[in-house]
Length: 320
Image 1: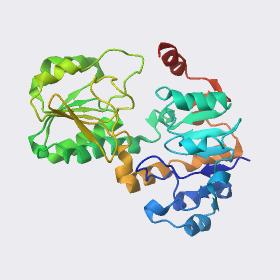
Image 2: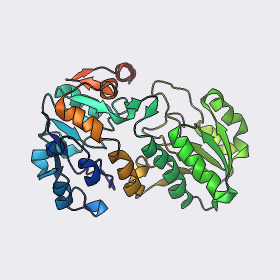
Image 3: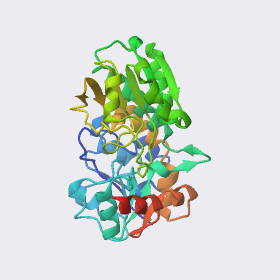
């Protein structure tokens, strides 16, 4: 049986938690879940509540030595000294975009199971978290736009889970919304002068060098227009002038166009996001504890025992 450690993420402003006491209590093997002391504090949840649900409380160093590490935002710098061969990292493992994470997992002979690759019956397991990202970026970004949202003429790129969340809020605010699906995404450049808001929710292939918008295209937009890039995990992918920003410093201006690209928006709505993640996890956590086969987890395993399984990681590393 494998023990699962839940460390507190030290990523700036990260307040989401992967598992809540009511869902610990739903598990077959709650006693194999170990939570770092103070784990639930951002949500007003005490250590005692985790213990009453059947979980256990431990110190950080012990948590990081468990067979499975469940951490939504992958790895903090202080974690790497504790990690060892054979451990499993279970969370948002962005191994294609993040060379550092890939190097740690391969050098230490670890396994990475990526939440972003978990699909069941065609549905992304954490689709609600993606919807919160899209909706939350519109709500937060609006505070820095200088406009009331009903004045927005918005181009929405993509209509997956994230896009639907953004669309729901945009239309609720009274914005005028035009959707650009993948098959006509490159039409945007010729129609850019119609919009004062561009919202990108489309996950772009890191190996695709094509740009939907180049830096020179910003001159076609009115000053004070805005770009909200919800899917910005690295610099200059799809939209040349976007790069990830933080909750504390969310916007910057290029050629008079406001850019918003906070890379972990759901933490702003951490109660909703935590609930949405937690309710999905028990079945997969029990499979990890017992070491039983699970098709969803198998397909989401991007690195196993230090060996890269996801060909996208290999192709991207060769290119870079």
